[in-house]
Image (spheres, helix red, strand yellow):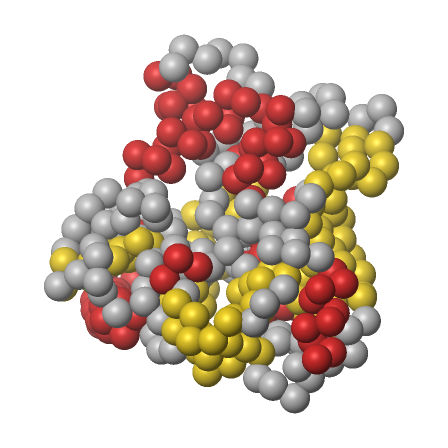
Length: 337
């Protein structure tokens, strides 16, 4: 466990942004994490997971602690369900594929989402009709100040759309070390309600889909729409889909009747941010090495040597234009550092 100085984070963020950490250390078990926190109590710290949901706009003047805890195990099981624990540093997609290989159902719709297991509850990640909160049982997290381990239940995490207690009430207070999911062993609830999944299954002549079929469909869809961060720097969806009050949306929809929307409650609708961005002409645009992906307007990309500041400027331009055009505010899903 070696602390390195002036360490490049280019390979530790999926945007591929060049930024330096004043100090950097990777921890591989809970005991190492406890030791680092104890020995550097007075220092400013920055916790780094898979680097998939952040935009680095500056060097990190802190001790960067990379959470690289590995491992997965079955906590308990019965005839119908299994409780699986994944360590925080496990790659999320690989964890999902492992669960599918064991015939454990519930995570297949979230295949190929970048990042690690430990950061999934923070954002309450989701895709194609599934969210972490649907299968999440609990997570263990270390208090940064006291090094005590606390267990957070599903209810205690206060999950919302791309929201949790870790983004608000206890932000910067805890480091998630492991997560437990309750998955199905039989009578799987196969979720193909999204049109894209149905179309992909039809294309591949799958009429009675299983877990692997749904996962393969999601992987194919994501690969067709989203660039591989190893080939083109990006952080997946940069913006959240805005949720608008129905009372406000009625006037907007009258003006833009072609606007797509989904009802999320008796009083709110969700509008696809990608559609809004595409309508104002940003899809496929490039500003130097910063740009918007040609297949998916929600994805901002680094074509090579863009700085975080350049990508941030593009995102702000998009937000301003969408607000001026539609009167709808879109927020970044990515954490801007």
